[in-house]
Figure (cartoon, rainbow, N blue to C red):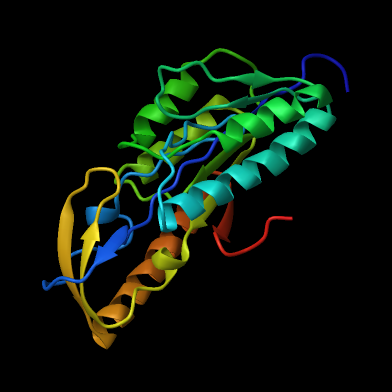
Length: 239
């Protein structure tokens, strides 16, 4: 191949729908992809931005670490092939670091390891920020849990940059399976808002059904806009 190589832009951003849990009385009001669970970041490949988060315990941290591992693996392959790699994360005002060549692998890994999950994220703004950046089209890889209200219109805009788009949908065990029966309090890790929930067998069943419908909708939408879709759990090895 000759000419200018397409650039790979990598990032990571995740947040769980259940958040930190505490025992408390109340009624179920949260569903996957909305309510108290909304607000994940995106970004990778020629993709959008990603969460810049402080180390958090539980699902938030495990999803971010998994997303960073995947970004590291993809970035390593790109760099040894001499494809440039840039990492887009929140805050969006911060310049996206660019890595070139095999010798940049340690710097890429160090940067990904430094990512921390703090504050709210805006997926739509991240996509707009990416589309406004100059440069040739390349592979766009979005690493996110997509737990943000604007995930669907934002994803629909990504192909406008040109090149291939891959959505790596990273969810945690707490996202995939509700906690045991009892009264709990859901805490949004980004806004710190709280919702009291009473978990019963019926509530858990409804949650699983809603989650399955939402994941199917995400996959369908990805395919409709020409993006590849890869669901990933924080419990699965990426090596």
